[in-house]
Image (cartoon, rainbow, N blue to C red):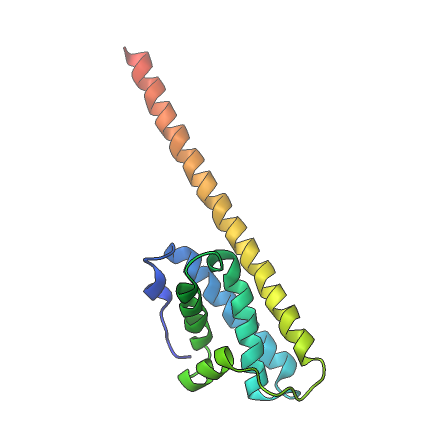
Length: 149
């Protein structure tokens, strides 16, 4: 929509890790639109989306610098929303038009966190596999050198 690139955050995290978050955020936006567009206000949908993004990014960023975590959240929300709606979604909770919205925020954030944790685990497993392969290759080279002497 706005064409924001996630490359801005490549220096702080691996680009593939960051880029892996954007499709999940976009899918969540689509699901929220499909599920709630006729039932709640745009501001409420925007806030639910921000809750999802907060959960999605928390496994990777919550323990780090808060400003970086917030910047990542802002960038992901901005993929789907214009600047004024990004600010509102991240800084205000709209007056609920439905009684179930308060619990929906927590549930949606929790779902985002589950997805974020799964992405973190997948990234960690890939990193472990790469390290194991590199160690195996290094070990093979060492053994070949020993055999040559």
